[in-house]
Amino acid sequence: MTTKEETEPVLDVVGCGFGPSNLALAIALEDAGLSRVAFFERQPEFGWHRDMLLDGATMQVSFLKDLVTMRNPASTYSFVAYLHEVGRLTDFINSKMLHPYRTEFHAYLEWAAAKVRVPVHYGATVEGLRVVAVGEADEYVEVAVRTDGGVRIHRARNVVIGAGLAPHLPPGVVPSDRVLHSDGLLGAVEGLRARRPRRLAVIGAGQSAAEVVDFLHREFTDAEVCAVFSRYGYSSADDNPFANRIFDPEAVDTFHAAPPGVKDLLLRYHANTNYSVVDAELSTELFRRHYQEKVRGRERLRVVNAARLRDVEEHAQGVRLSVEHLPTGAVDVLDADAAVFATGYRPVDPLALLGDLGGDCKRDADGRLLLERDYRVLTSGATRCGIYVHGGGSEHTHGISAGLLSTTAVRAGEITHSVLDRLA
Image (cartoon, rainbow, N blue to C red; front, side, top):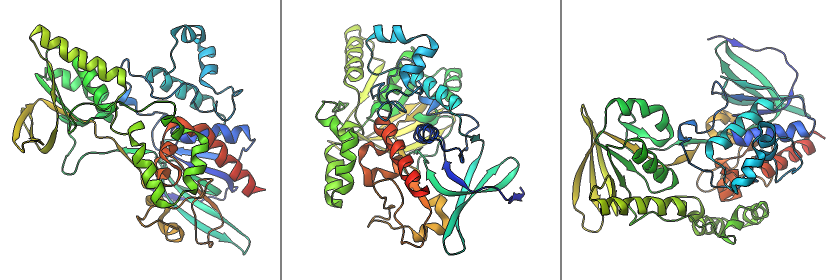
């Protein structure tokens, strides 16, 4: 690959990644009239957890928590505007749905990504950032972007990192055609179907795990589906109106100003609003299906609860799981044609992009970046340009909603206002 360094105008904003967070930001920047903007996304086209767009799966947030409504209810980029444009608004109203199907919401995101007017470059991987001083009063960030044509340097006064989340597998688990993360499930279905599986195992206790169990049980009608998790049963998500206040935009102010110990406490208190919990309706449906099979005398949905996975061994015929029953310590062997790990995601570490600039960024006791209320990375003062991080990488400073759709629209507006203030 060759490296091209061309003299270009300094951009006001460069966005690293183009998932829902930076898509919402692109719309907010467009609304503010900023034109010297560019976004770079490594995927060849817009996509958001495509392999988890399971038939019938719904969003866990209201359709009003889209890309724009909580920031600008009159926006032409709203989910309601999308429904109106595609001719489904009346039917959606009649359906009385608060939580749209995930496939439909993804189609909405694709529609918005295609409609936004700021430049978005796909198939472009941001490899690193470097601050360059210009005289004594000015500086900018050099953003190295790799495409098929080589590496090109872009310059910007502000950079917004929306690196998103990466699938997480337990230590020692190596992905393959038979050992999958749920994030790649749909792409592996045809391969699984060709093997005519007799038993499939799903490891995990959260929403994705329950959705995978439901999907596989419906898709592979001749196979036994084993749900393996350490809890006694699926735990329902706490979605009562009071608990949901943790996702309010105003809660971000309170959380950011709280002492570190209080932040940790609040995250633990309200983890059951989002992590390792299942929608109550889906949990009930799976239980009733499990019970109905007991009545019929043919149990295909098998629950291996209060159990911990000790080892995974792949062989030519499938996978062998060593499963420890926690109350007794007994270890059983579970043979399956394939295992799907619905073991969640981890935030992509933004420090990987910052390079030498990371040394000027302040961190907490756990080595995580410290962020101002406007999502700007707190620096020693030597760096004057704006480096912003939003999404999963800001949960420790801005609360549980930081990596979720709940405050995406408001967050995009806050970063935009901060950028405008700095440019002024």
